[in-house]
Length: 298
Image 1 (cartoon, rainbow, N blue to C red):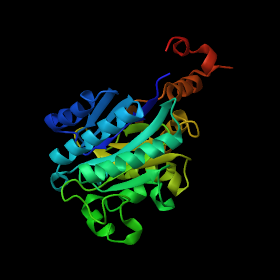
Image 2: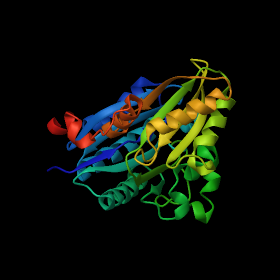
Image 3: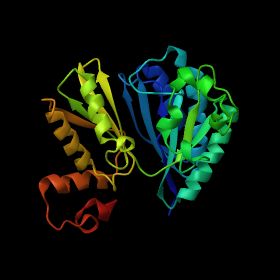
């Protein structure tokens, strides 16, 4: 069976469609690689791109994508709700089929070195690829964002793994690494008070004593005049979507606020959604492997 590795880079651009398409074209034109999805958010000013392939195909596509993003995106002119430190902000590799964590770690090291050399974009290795414990968490690496990164990397503790103690003057730096499947999941609130979303995010996220494998922030969606709790579920098998949904709803009620809708950004494992369907439908003795039709035909 063919090896499948998934990559889900986030680029710091969600408004200029010409730039987005030019970056995505780097995936479309790479042999051994298949573009699955790309999703842009103008409020976050960010695009999430998903593609799969064998190690070599993903390697080539990832380097090409980084080079094009650095060429076209100038973070000195970038604004958006989502924190960012690079034109390509993060580039994870996820083993899907006939691939191991170790192979994805090795791929991240190869790609990271090439991006630093060929795209002139310094690289931090993060998550399972991290070379220091403090670099496992993307938010810790990203602290200070693009504007503060030039000073941050002067500290020997925060010199990038590839590219030297510097940033690209327009492209910043990027985090590259291997990780488990992640679900990007947002909940919209019927309030324009962004502080409520920020308060809820602090309660539910792991680093502040909340749910395991949950990272969360509160944002304002200016074009809709509503607040949003934006979440990265770093392991839906530990904390399922329904559990974080119910906790956000409960916390929102304390402020007299409702969750008006949710959204999944990019692709999501089927099991993550089936778990929530099983919970809300109160299905008894459900067997995912035996009772899901697609398991027999996909």
